[in-house]
Image 1 (tube, rainbow, N blue to C red):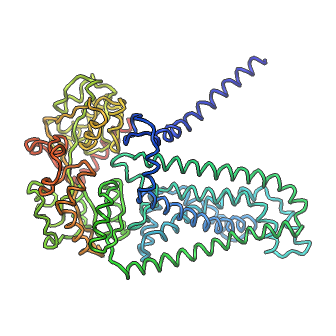
Image 2 (image 1 turned 90 degrees about the vertical axis):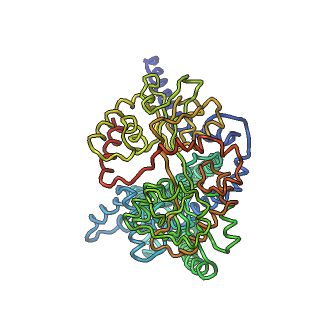
Image 3 (image 1 turned 60 degrees about the horizontal axis):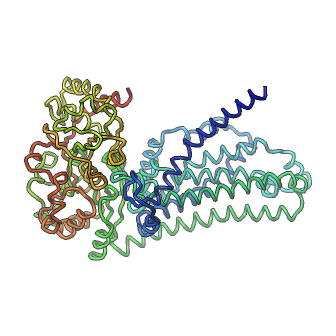
Length: 632
């Protein structure tokens, strides 16, 4: 019997070890790599503290962190105050419609976040409330209140109402009873609710994306938008510091809860002693006064600050990918023209489109990839650019003008361009891949990392069959789907964010990746070789566009012209390894970069490539193919 119990205990210990390992080993790896000397989180290159030092020099990350803490703190205070009062009222009183109200309480919890985000954005838009800090606080308060109510009500379920009755029998008034008896006894629940509200606010991405405004980005949004280049070690360092801070708060909270539970029985015995109650009153009063003061002062400062800014200086609201425009360049523009640049980021063209379509914050300039220009132009979301205000447009090479998405060069100005290539770790697989058809080779079983991009992956199946990346014939698309079913066994990882990582660390032997990712992978691992499939490359081009209703159109055109100055354009290319369409900037760039055929392929290779186009209603078929491929 003892042996059986010991065996059972060992199994439970093993089970616990496995569960905790799954939870905490990724966190430990994150902490370890925050001290890694390599810029790429794939291979250990040596120990360093430099990322912690650079973290505090990265103003965008620090600002985003400050914004997140401020929004989380204020929204947690407000939602705690509202949620506590609502929980007590719904617990103690009966009134008509209580059942319905109780049901509505769960709506913010069960409703999809994207629905709530769009709904709140449209609500703020209708009320003409500018998106930014204020709308973020209101939105976070909206979805946090329900959680606070539920947590506080769970504490009230174990509440002894006889204590309140005894206090009132002894002459205490209702408000005095609430402050001296009820609040101190449910304080642990209030604390738990406030911590939950704080955590939810710090963690939110989707709702925040829709209700944030120009120049006000939270940390989750900043990190999420950085995936175009992969998460930098600075984020690992920041996450480590946040983890230490969170653990400290958790330990403090646990100690406070333990102390509260221990003292609760004592309080029940001496509950009417004025000394203890006076202390409780002061604590609770301070909490609610803090809520009123902070919320009031912040709201006032926010309004006055925005008015002051609008009156004191000109602004420019930029909507762009993260890690796609050097901060030094922005600072040069601000210094030269005395125009404040509010820089807001997104992680995909679809995110950018969704926010502009929903009638969100007014941006003066955005960066859109070729096929998305088609979509935005067809939906009347962008306006014509006055090229007379952009004399540096002449610096753009002719091969990047007059493309199908903007044949008359009215709506766009080219910014950067690139391609998708095949990269092979020659130490793992000794084979050449000269065509897309080679990717179907059985030797590549479970060894490929490919872009998590339906147009790109369905496109290579179409090219294998001799069709276009922009094919719309349902019969030909069905053929492509059948080919992708065969390819699936070779695909190990779908990753558009940082596919270079899988190539560098050897997790994948072959990759269909962005050209810039292949270049970064080669810098870390010289064994990686790049191939250009003979059927033709998937080529993309990012372009400046000006949204309809842009409040500072002249500033946007001035900014575009500034970025097209050869010296500035060359500086951008030096920071980010994408191909530059500015031929005058090429004269100032190093030959090694210009001679890199992955970044700048031969003209004959480019001619065989294709840009993506808006597919209209055929997009539905692509969605269906992609869903079937990823789900089976």
